[in-house]
Length: 231
Image (cartoon, rainbow, N blue to C red; front, side, top):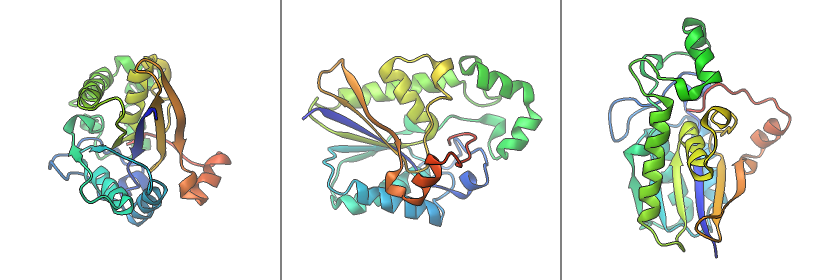
C-alpha cells in the first residue's frame, strides 16, 4: 500500500462563525477558541468517516480547536493508544495586530495591507506577527521532521488549520506561494489526502472533501459557502 498523508482542518469555532481572525493565541498547549456545537458535530462526523482508516501516528496543532477535533477522531477510530503528538510548528499563522478582529473590519482598517496580502502573500508580514513566507517555511520544516520520523509504509494524520494545510500542499508539490496560497481552500473539518507510491511521486487523492458533512457539502457544491480567511 502507498503511504498516505491525511490532512484535517479543525471544526468550526465561534471565531470562525463570526469571521474573527484567530491564528496564534497565547495559552499553550490548549489556547484559542474551543469548538462550538457545530464544530463538535463536524468533528464527530469526520471521526466516523475515518473510523476504519489505519493511522500510524497523529500530529496536531496545539490550538484547542485542533486538539478537540483530534480527540473526536480518536474516539471513532477506537484506538486509545494511537501515537499522537502536539506539534507547535503546526499552529496557524500569527496574525499579529489583526488577531481578534472581524475579517471585514480588518480589511477596512488595513486596506493597503490586504491588497498586498491577496496579491503578493510572499511579501506579506503581519504587523507584530509573522510573515507568510516564514510561516510556510516553519510548516515545511515541521513536515520534513515528521516524514523523517516514520517509515515509508506508515500513514500519518495531521490536524491543523487552513493556512497550514495550504502550506503543506505548497511544500510537497513545490507550488508558487503567490499563486496557490489563496487558491487552496479548506472548509472546517474537511479532509485532504496525499499519497505516495514512490518517495518522489506524490498524488492528490482528494482536496477539501466535506462529503461526510452532508448538508454542508450540498451548500459548497452550490457555491453558497462564504470564505474569508481559513483560520
